[in-house]
Length: 300
Image (cartoon, rainbow, N blue to C red; front, side, top):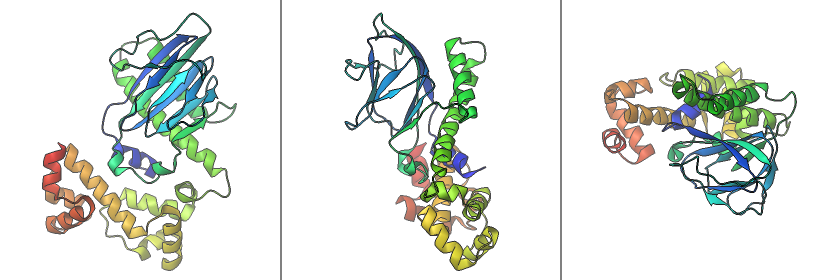
């Protein structure tokens, strides 16, 4: 798997959900904050996003995508001055509109483990706006169209198709944002790391084989750089030295295995590169402040 897919898989904690709304002005909805992230896509018409933390509202046009990392309390309305009615997830079809101009929006949310957020996601701003532009992000537009069609007219199989499309949409949204940022020659951090051939090669190697006894020298050879040059470039772009990131990623995988399976501690240890459960337990406790066994008992 690639780094972006791995990062989202590691953080995923629940089933995504979404609703398709056909609204007539005046209307306004307030979405409560929570763990994870949210998105809004305008399928028809236009509306205003009222971001969290008193940031200024901005308009969304047909085809625009807004992604909110952290999913803080925010609003969506036909006008920045329209009153906002609390959105009830238990009754998503409750009327909130009037009899004016029609807007159709697709709104959804993902549950993600913020306590173990992958650092690449932290580079996405709290509110990311991906405006519709002809010739840009065709795959994202296709995913939006498919999801909108499925939710506009539910048919047999929708129960499996919609969650799969929602997971696909999340990856397309993040890919589109990173691709747009990568167009800036001054891009730094994870945006640069994912597009830097040397560092991307090393990251892929770590993610493909986290159980391998990697050394900085070997990762540097994979990247085509000297040990010293590789260590400096990796640390600069990723924000952590290579082996620090390797350990962090191993422990992230281990925590997911402990939460989601009954695999023995020794097997988990070997899957993340430790030959003994004692050495693994010590490394895990340094990261999480508790033993693997106690972590499993409190998270399952």
